[in-house]
Image: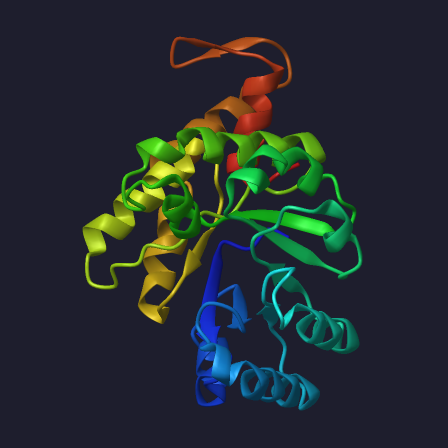
Length: 253
């Protein structure tokens, strides 16, 4: 899964499902977890089920393992055959029985088990839940420094398991465009290749922020043109790893 933008939609707002699909997000995530109050969980599940039964296509973020709603949510996504985002991902065995899974790593245990989670056959991507982890660690979610270790764990675990680079967590401020741009730049620099979005207006800047810059594309073309042998481009040595990076920038294998 190489998607860049993942847009959350509250599972109890079926009036927004179609609008979310039309927003241009790579993946629409119908959210049964944080966006839905406990008293509304059953109604939200029914709304999501009905929409999927009518031909709608989306990913579903279910409630976390160990919650009263997990079993019913898991039964829904299994029956509908849709991809699922599993919050508080910590236990590989739980993920193994759920079809196509994006494992949302947002606890200290999950971070420490990132390699095990990424190695589960059903897991197609890791995602980072910075807000929940911030609460557990007692740090500010908007400060990137406390999460450098966690982000690196997810990036390395994904690469080791042969997965696409992980998906970064949300930017909660919907009005601070500079903050969103800075968050995307930082995530990309750390090795991420996508982001969780909470509003359609975040989609375009997130997609643009993860796209290669013009300078990067021009550099990559010069490197590829230089050929397979060791050479020099812009005064720097180009060998096999550098050529591989250039090809990734150009979308080549």
